[in-house]
Amino acid sequence: MLFNTCKSFVVALALGASTAMASSYQNSSRALMSRRLTEYQMPVATETHEFARVPNSSFVLLTQMSDSELIKIQLDPKTEEPIAFHSFPMGMNSSSQLHGVWPSTVYPGKMWLSLQGDNKLLLVDPGKHLSSVPHILKTIDIPQPGNGPHCVFEIGNRVWAGLKVASEQTGKYYVFSANIRNSTDYKLYEALNSPVFIKEEPTTGLIYVTQDTDSSIMRINVTSSETKQMHVPASVGNNAVGMISATGPLSGVWFTLAGNATGGTGTFGHIGASGEMNFFTLKHPMLGVNAGLLHIADASTTDGGPALWLLSTSLLSNESPDALVRVTFDDSLSALAEEEYISMLTQNAMVHRVLPLDNTVLVSELHTFTLAQLTYKNTVAGQWLPAEAVTNTSVYTKAG
Ligand SMILES: *[C@@H]1O[C@H](CO)[C@@H](O)[C@H](O)[C@H]1NC(C)=O
Ligand SMILES: *[C@@H]1O[C@H](CO)[C@@H](O)[C@H](O)[C@H]1NC(C)=O
Ligand SMILES: *[C@@H]1O[C@H](CO)[C@@H](O)[C@H](O)[C@H]1NC(C)=O
Ligand SMILES: *[C@@H]1O[C@H](CO)[C@@H](O)[C@H](O)[C@H]1NC(C)=O
Ligand SMILES: *[C@@H]1O[C@H](CO)[C@@H](O)[C@H](O)[C@H]1NC(C)=O
Ligand SMILES: *[C@@H]1O[C@H](CO)[C@@H](O)[C@H](O)[C@H]1NC(C)=O
Ligand SMILES: *[C@@H]1O[C@H](CO)[C@@H](O)[C@H](O)[C@H]1NC(C)=O
Image 1 (cartoon, helix red, strand yellow):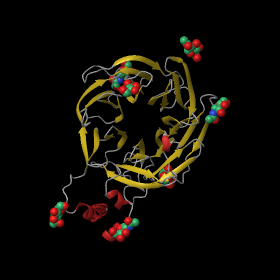
Image 2 (tube, protein in one colour; image 1 turned 60 degrees about the vertical axis):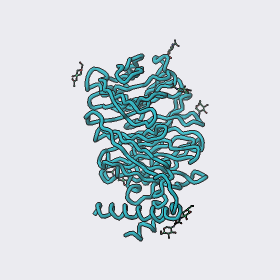
Image 3 (tube, helix red, strand yellow; image 1 turned 30 degrees about the horizontal axis):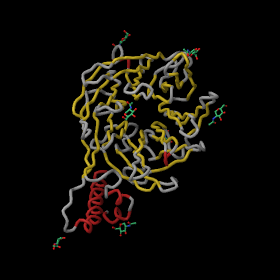
Image 4 (cartoon, rainbow, N blue to C red; image 1 turned 90 degrees about the vertical axis):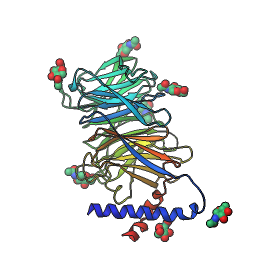
């Protein structure tokens, strides 16, 4: 059944594309446009987690949690293609659970890491060469009752971590924040189960935190230390995970709902300066409405305007596809305009994070220890013609 639906979907795209292209391509020689995904195999591990680019370098750092290994990946400086990697154990052994990785701005070129099992944050110098061993510059011990730093971020002069594991002392969950230069100046904010992403709303300076299991967004005023919980209405979906802070026309924080074992709802949200939550829902009948949106990235370009990358994963339900979705908005940012869908090469790969580079986009696959790279030739994201067909549902009903 699913296979049949897939086939007619492909046919529909092909018909839509050839009709649209016929007039503009007659009797002229043109370079072909292409959109390509390539998978790069990483060392075998059960949990390929976070990844981030070392700013101004051709290195990407990827964490594998199950064996606490840090993978340093070298990119071709021109094409951005991954060309080689070197793997480094971090912490004492696999129980150290290397998880978070985030670039420091306060210390340019240095990277934050979290060891969830060891209850530590590390600031490392990744080294100039592929084989240089990452050098630990600073270690921050998570104070009790905090437990299990998962994702790590730097915001202004503070380092933040969502503590994913229930406290051994209190049974509660916390968000950790410390002054980067003086970590005795720290704060633990009590959270729900369980904090994941932590981002600053650029206009108000308020900090927002996604909490997955309890499906709520926590707001922190760092000046007053006041916190507030904003529950995601069950009617739109659940399981708030990915979050970014955006400036310009998209100003505010954007977060995704990953759904549950019955699948996702293709829904993501925005909180701007007003502090209100607004939700947006994907429309595509196969890849959109059941999407379990785990992660998100800014896809805005000077020419193309404001846009977002959304990552749907099969991590929580195989009712949700592994797909990358690029969305644009209407002028007032109140509704979605275009949706471009890229189905991942390997379904059930449990895609995990999306990272736009300068000209390509990387996606990590938790279940298959791979990195996938999306590359456009002679066109750019958002200009791919089948994206127009996707918004025209009459094409599908005709192709039946
Ligand atoms: C194609 O275009 C060229 C130059 O624009 C013209 O000379 C030629 O007659 C055209 N051929 C056909 C088949 O239309
Ligand atoms: C890792 O090292 C710690 C401390 O020596 C030890 O307690 C733990 O059992 C080790 N774990 C593994 C998986 O070897
Ligand atoms: C990267 O390079 C840009 C421009 O050369 C510079 O402004 C920025 O500070 C650098 N960032 C880091 C983290 O080194
Ligand atoms: C570091 O922070 C602690 C706690 O806020 C404070 O008591 C101490 O004076 C600070 N140290 C420096 C060198 O600023
Ligand atoms: C944060 O708290 C401070 C101190 O109470 C208050 O002055 C400020 O307005 C609050 N910020 C926001 C954005 O609500
Ligand atoms: C899963 O999510 C859907 C959509 O939000 C909801 O209707 C359903 O009750 C949830 N199921 C469970 C077991 O939480
Ligand atoms: C949708 O596609 C159909 C069939 O190709 C076409 O007739 C119709 O004009 C299209 N609608 C829009 C809004 O592009």
